[in-house]
Length: 418
Image (cartoon, rainbow, N blue to C red; front, side, top):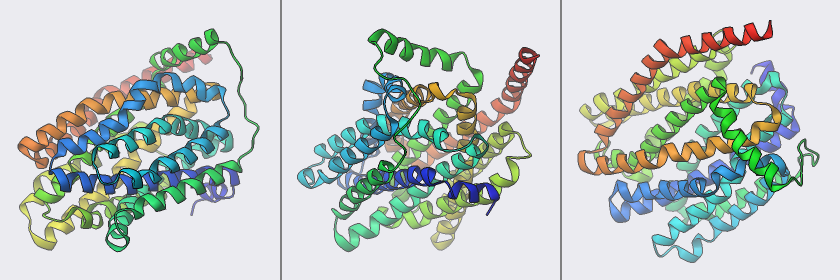
C-alpha cells in the first residue's frame, strides 16, 4: 500500500466520513437492487424501472438549487447526522407499503430529498479533514467506494432476499444508516463558515455559486465530464434488468455475480494499482482520455461480442468487460473530483457540490426516460452500442479540443501570476 494511503488511514476524521459514505452507499444500492428486481419482475418494463430513477431525481430539481448555500452556512456535521437518521426511517418505512408498487417510489423520493443535503455536505467536508496533498488519494478512495458499494449492495441484496425474505435489505440498510450517523457524530463540532446571514446575502450566495462555476473553466470542465458519466451510468442502471434477461439470459437476482462483482474488481485495480502509478507522472486529462477509451472498449464488448457468444463463455467475457468498466469509472471520476476540490475555495465547496448535484439530475432525467423507452422498443443491446458511440465521441472531442482548452487556460493563469 502506498504511503499516501497509509497516511489517510491514520486520519480518524476521514475514516469517520468514509464509514458514513460506505454505509450510505451500500444501503441505497441494496435497496435499489431490491426495488429494481421487484419492479421489473412485476412489470417487465424498463420504463417502469426508469421511473425509479426519475423519482430519485425530482428532489434535486425541486430543492437542489437552494441547497448549496445552506450547506456552506450550516454545520456539515449536523447535516450528515440528521440526514442519516431520517434516511434510516425512510428505508425502514418500506414495511408499511411493501404490498404496493406506487408507495415504493415515495420512499425513493424521500430518501433522495434527504440526499440533496447529505451528498454536498459530505463532499464539502472532505477537504476540512484531509490535507490538500492527500486529496487525490481521498477522492480515489471515495470513487472506489461508490463502485465497491455497488458491488456489495447488489451482491448482498439478492442472497439476502433469497435467504431471509424481501424485507431484509431494508432492515439491514436502516441499521447501517444509524451506524453512519453515530460515526459522523464523532467528527469535530467546530467548522469554518459564517452563520445567521440575511436572506439577501443567502440569495447572493446562491446566484454566485452558479456564476462562479460558469466562469471557472477548470471547474466547469470536470463538472461536465461527471455529468456525462452519471448520465451513462444511469442509463446502464435502467437497462440492466433488460440486458440481463434478454442478452445474458440470467435471472436478475443471480446476475450481480456476472457483472457487478467484476466491475468492483476493476475499480479496486484502478484505485490501488493503476492510479497511484499514473497520477503523479501523467496529466489528469490524459488519465481521463484513458478512462474514456476503457469505457468504450467495455461497452463495445457488451454490445457486439457478448451477444454472439453462449453459455459460460458469454458470462466470462461479460465479466471481463465489467472489469474494464470498473477501471474506466475510477479513471474518469477521480481526476475530475480532484480538480474540482483543488480549484474551489473552501468557502465555495458546498455551493459547488450543491450545483453539481442539481446539474447531474437535470442531465440524467430526460436521457434516462428516453433510453428506457428505446430499450423497450429495440432492446438493451442497441442502447449499449449508443453509449459506446457516445464514449468514443467524447474521447475524440477531449483529445482534439480539451487538451488545447486546458493548455490555453494554464498559460493564462501563469501570465496572471507573473
